[in-house]
Amino acid sequence: MSAPLRSRPAAPHRAADAPLVFPRTLTVGVIGAGRVGTVLGAALAAAGHRVAAAAGASGTARARMALLLPQTPTRSAAAVARAATDLLIVAVPDDALAGVVAGLAEAGALRPGQVIAHTSGAHGLAVLAPAAAAGARPLALHPAMTFTGTPDDLTRLTGISYGVTAPAELRAFAARLVADLGGVPEWVAEGDRPLYHAALAHGANHLVTLVNEAADRLRDAGVDRPEKVLAPLLRAALENALRLGDDALTGPVSRGDAGTVRRHLERLAATAPESVPPYLALARRTADRAIAAGRLRPADAAPLLDVLDGMEVAA
Image (cartoon, rainbow, N blue to C red):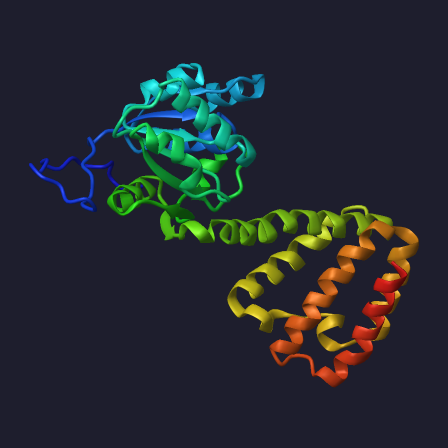
């Protein structure tokens, strides 16, 4: 991790977009002691910053704080906001974020000049409008990583990307904060936050569902340890996809093997009908990408697409 943020001599007059000056060691508060908030708090503490207080109501949250932030006192959300004189991290679920921010502003818990950073990938700066109206400085700081809320997460932070949306005067601060966390900033425009988050959720969250679907179907086929079968195959597929893009496509859809795909769907319909719609959707999208990439000729794709269309009607 980089050195903590360093102070600079204050200029007598600062242009509107000039970088702001912050103390070398930030006083930080964390609201939302979930998997993300506690890990980021622990990472900031390891980088030399002072985590003054954290908020988490559930027993699980308190246990997580005891593990990752053992020296940090537990306080109410408003008390944490008041203690976080430099940086307040709000790491709550997406749909709860607006209410939490509005509540803090209404309680008078925010102070002018304080940075309030949320960790939501779906939201940008607009959700922090009540905080900005109170004089706080808004920042969207989303780590592109899946978290378990354990010390193992700290080792995974090095080199990850953070989707950052920031006012011009906070960009230098945001970049240095991400560096303190061991990451790399990816600057995301306000209007692009939903698309940015959709891409990550589609790739990571749906990947988990897809892997578990495959494991379940292998169990249905009599495989006792599906994870042993899937692990080398999926690791190779992921690495190839990241390295080669659509050139990594293999399998019956990319070859236009309509008969094989028909047999897949017939057996799925008999064994696990709930798996038919996602198979159809992914097979159709795979065929489209294979055709666009030149890996599947439209003429060879026609029988395959007929099979998919027929099963969609039947479903």
